[in-house]
Image 1 (spheres, rainbow, N blue to C red):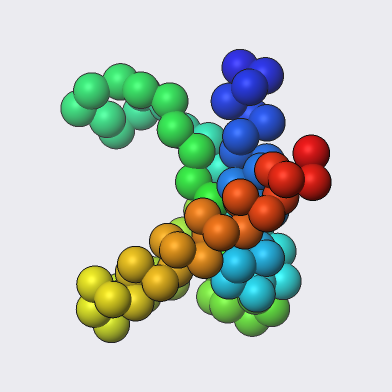
Image 2 (spheres, rainbow, N blue to C red):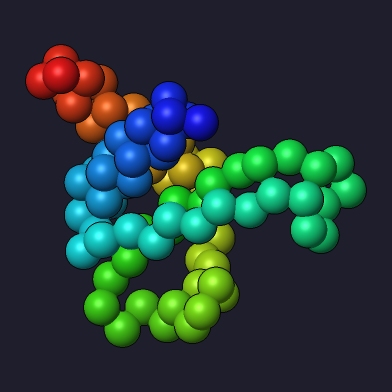
Length: 86
């Protein structure tokens, strides 16, 4: 589990930096309400007054695939830069 959470911490930091968020919400989930039991982590960028209530956050769809790919590119670039510092 150590490497898994090290990667989750790296990704949470990268999401925060790449998306210019004020923080992140990190939650783990396993088995409950899953058709195929597995373990996973949610990493959600946070901003003040973003509407997060408990485990439910306002979801916003990407405008298009281009926006989704730009977010992905930014997060990947941030991770690459962070790994160079390690």
